[in-house]
Structures are given as structure tokens and as C-alpha cells.
Image 1 (cartoon, helix red, strand yellow):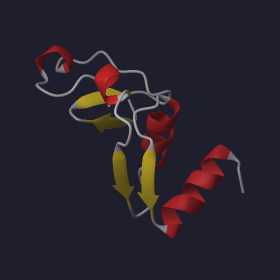
Image 2 (cartoon, helix red, strand yellow):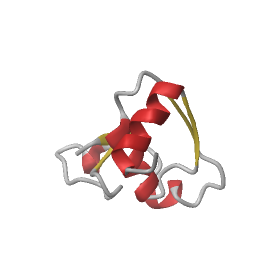
Image 3 (cartoon, helix red, strand yellow):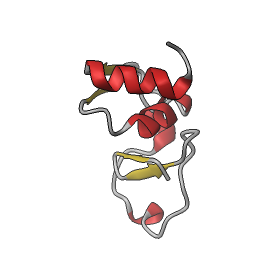
Image 4 (tube, rainbow, N blue to C red):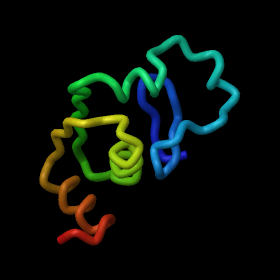
Length: 81
């Protein structure tokens, strides 16, 4: 488990994790979230890069605003400098 979006926890590939809360969340389902044309996320401080990468891999977000530190950390994590 690397992150959470709309109450749903996901792994490094963006796949929803089996948690005790999974069936108790009152929120948009991740499959529905993937169909939204623009789902915007803003991140700063560089400490959520595994979550960002997992969300991108799982197509849970499609618009991202991050600060320079986060961009550098994410670039280092993916090996794309």
C-alpha cells in the first residue's frame, strides 16, 4: 500500500488493496474515477512520490501539479532524469 485516493488504498501499480475498509468506503469507485476526463492532484514537499507513481501507473490521476522537489524526487524514482 503506497497511497490513497477518495478513501481507496492502492499499491505501487495503482491496484486497489484489500483492506478492512474497502467495502465500507462511501466514495466514487476507482473504475469510475479512471473514466473522469480530468482528475487533478496537487502534491508538494516530495514525500509522496511512490503514491504519485502508483496513481499514475494505475491511471487514477491524469493531471498533476507538483513542486520542484517532488518533480526531482519522482524523476529519480523513475530513473528519468
